[in-house]
Image 1 (cartoon, rainbow, N blue to C red):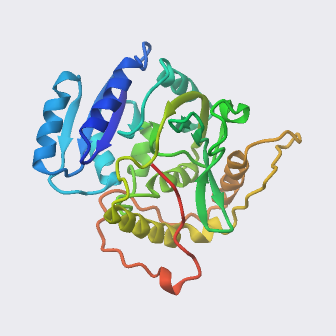
Image 2 (cartoon, rainbow, N blue to C red):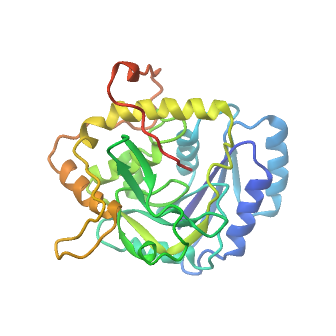
Amino acid sequence: MISIIIPTVNQVELMTRCLHSLYDSSPTNTYSYEVIVVDDGSPAEIQGKLREALRSFPVRLLTHTNNAGFAVTVNRGVAASKGKYICLLNNDVTLIQKNWLDIMMKDTHRVRAGVIGPRLLYPDGTIQHGGIIYIPETHGFDHEYRHQPGNYPPAQKTREVLGVTGALMLINRELWDSLGGMDERFFIGMEDIDFSLRTWEQGWRIYFSGMAVAVHPEGFTRGNDPYWRSKGLESGHRFAEKWHRKLAALRRMLHPVDGQGRPISISEAQAIQWRKIVSRGNSLPVATKGTYTTYRSDATNSKYSPPVYRSR
């Protein structure tokens, strides 16, 4: 069983478009799956329209009365699910490939595979996501191969990576439970990178499944609302406080090679570095779900700026 969890807020048309693409893609003939949609506190009128729109789909709908953030929303969806694997799916993702989930599931059989992420494209066909990379110069993150042609050969390979975006992420349930899900202290933004870094700390691995592909315009759910931008900035400050000591040891090599001198991706090279960093046994405390401590940012008194990351 695979549990597909789709968070949404204030978006009925976008949500139904995502579901049409999901069922039209016939995601798998090999595994059974369930779909759970979680509305994160849309106004009652919109939730009513969403409930009506979803009647034609075999999905379960969970609703929040107040906006609680991405981490809380997906955690609630997973808590209500039964799958051995969890697939987080953004409501602005369009599934264009018939066997996308089967391809990703095959990669779950790789060594200690905990998280799998696919190649994501912008609507114009260029690459939106090819694995997450850390940029030490800015203390920020980005997606590898962004804006390269969609069929860029290096982006079609399957490899270990530092992290993958939560816009479309397949997760082993055992790993999810051991980490306590997404850290709910990140209201919006950075929680997928935090989850990726904690995955490596637990001795699991993250794979980029380059042959699986979907379309993701990026940021359509939130738009340019100042509220979401301010919440994203808060998450950036929190992330900097939590991870800057370890990330100081992570480097970005522009032309990395493996032990045999063969070219590898930057994200793969950083995954190798990160595995060594976290194996030293100096893990920072891991925050899990259910933590609602009020957050006060001390970033103005620190040399560390909040990370910049164009996420979901």
